[in-house]
Image (cartoon, rainbow over all chains, first blue to last red; front, side, top):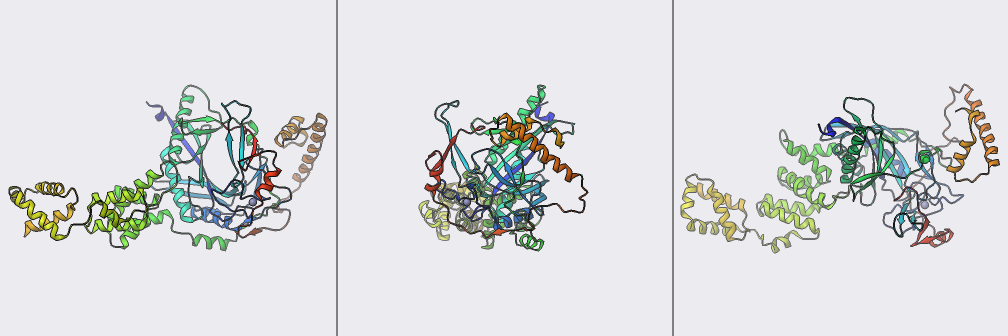
Length: 488
Length: 100
Ligand SMILES: [Zn+2]
């Protein structure tokens, strides 16, 4: 029996989501990614004596949006100081919500498993500054130091904490990807991993099959893509299984994921690292959101992923096949549902739009972003232009796929110019007709056999036509022309 | 928590967390003071406060917020001048424990 079959994996995730406000959580400094170091700083976020923080009302609204989208209860909340000595916070504490978070008891549905994951809480806190370690030579060198940029210190975050309800790397990945889609739908976050808008920590434990008590967990940090998340969970679970099988015990600790080596390793941390000595932040007032306002915010939420999937499903008649359901999920996951809906509105058959969206577009988008949670974009107008031409038979499906791939690698390519360049200029009905005349006269035997019912010979003619035209003829159009001739 | 049981080692631990360098005499002194504070908390614990709502803030105020409008940041050079060491417009600090 493989070791994986002897243990049950339990995973809980903590997702930090940066809010898309204009300013920081407690001061008017710009919330802007990519600014020159230490340009968005002020006495409040530098923790200078005498400065006073004031809560950003939009950050609170965004936290309520997120909580509502995750079916949380929105509650009165209090900010605490989480004390620790580390230069990423110049105040030597981080302001966070501790025992009274703004959102509690929510849930998230995993579409494909299907499974409901409980959300224990979603609380507000401020982000820390960014430290860059600068080594001189080798690891154990006295001259090593770190550089600190406080532009990120104080940026509003919502930390979403799941219950330990996930039991595989695949479920964890789907949880994050569904959560990302929800966050983007609320417009409270852009969900961009590349810019650190979404950061994930995973709590992983294993226990022998047939036992109830959860094993000791390790927290894995530094998971900045869906791929890392899956790899790190599989590595860590396996490490714990092997340790337990060898009679060792698991130490509760924080571990760092090393993407290059594909391993987790224990962080050197002092035992008092968890001794944060929380106490209520006296400079901030409690939050007690008005329930009518909360209801208004919840009502104004954009259309959420489950409804977005339903909208796509309704484009198709009758019962959906397994693969069509997957196509629907893929389109929503990669933010391509609006592409499909718009295409259908312009008259493209739904099945074609869905297939091109979930196969071609999703794979380009996915390839472009394989190392992040971010979703790349694909110009919607050009997608519609290409598949409209395909549905009208003006380009073949192979040609349509080539056009989409060219546009994927360069969004500025114009469809008409590409058609010109690739020689996809659609043959007129006359040209098709002439071509077929020529094929019939050159292959009269085959044509008669085709007309007599040897349908497989249709492929023979299309092949010949492709050869003559260097693959530029639209096979579908030619096939229907042949069918018309045979009948007529 | 038992008020009379605070030890000088706990005081040392707390002082270390706050990066305070205390002399042995100060440790003894503060251990006594902390014990007195915990003793006072014990007095409050002995009262029946079932009808008293928890205090979330010293003042009866809530929801004090500001609008999400950008305000001018401080002058970077002025701030960096206050730092002991800088490099590339960033604060230079000693190597941080726990990082590779
Ligand atoms: Zn600031």
